Length: 444
Ligand code: AMP
Image 1 (cartoon, rainbow, N blue to C red):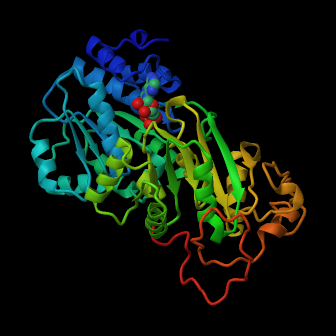
Image 2: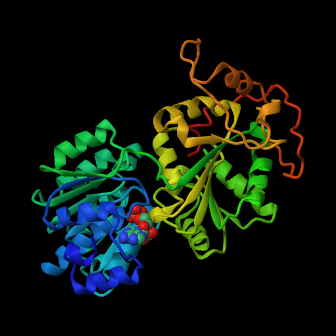
Image 3: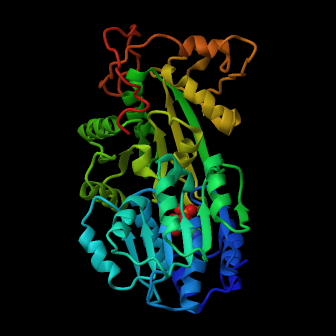
């Protein structure tokens, strides 16, 4: 099917062509006709599938067919970065029309946004917090909304925005088209969908899984050898640009500094940075001034940067959904990409959950002499280890052999030695360093 066959108007087709889109992606092929018909749609699609254009194109068509000087479309997104990205896509696709967009998010001047709202934009893309502030001050008129989009609904829920969203929904017209996009469908999102969508059509590409064009590799490594291994892999791989995910804001900042000291063009993106710093980091990464972005999950949500060839999970994510989102930062729009995980012994429980959700066949265990602590004779060099799950053993999940090796005590102190060394440091038991709160939850 072509974009012409989807019934798009001339100025929209021209913008599609200029964006370099030659054929609709499957989610566009399925979603656009339904949305054009005015149906409520639940889009359960992976990241990088072209879902933004799948809703932006029919929304633009609808606005062109029935023009008015009022906010007609409200898109709610969980993060500023995603909101900005959605706006970029709307702007590109509405380039040959007079439609206007405004993005609303916190951390920047409210007055600028209020001024932009005075110019009668038809499309508003908003993060919930700032939108509620503006609504509370009567600075935004949502009385003419006829289309509501909830993008990355699962993340909106994870970030605790559902009560805010319900407040926003209560304040907009009941008669409207609803589009809800979510890579995963936790029960809270299904409930929200039941409450607000009318006879929705579900557009589903596949169960939540990383795109098939991504190769996944797992590297067993002691925690204190993560940095040398990362440096080694970055030297070895042909990387055009990479996103490295850490578990905490502090680790993102520190790792970006460590990589910069090693001569890498690395920048951090994490929630402790001001909006101006975040914009600067993102702008620099997009334009190629930096080729490594070290980010936490929340900061990097939904980023769409086509040059990203590698995603490194410096720390494993807390849940499989985050893994799918992280991996989806590469191989955008059906390109190929690599997702690497550095797995320390203390990550094994997270790995087990990941494997259960995504399937162990997805992952290649790969090791390198000097970094691998599964360094039994057969596991040096590139190997695939058979980690058959044995549920009959107490505490099973991972085979006893791997668990035994993964369970070795390690020194939690991070080693800053360079990747040139090939011998792993002697493994020492950790002592004297007690954490007062879980590092998984701390400082996100
Ligand atoms: P999304 O899933 O909306 O984050 O989109 C992922 C990427 O796919 C973005 O870079 C889009 O610009 C790109 N894209 C969207 N639609 C198409 C298409 N029909 N052909 C090629 N690329 C596309």
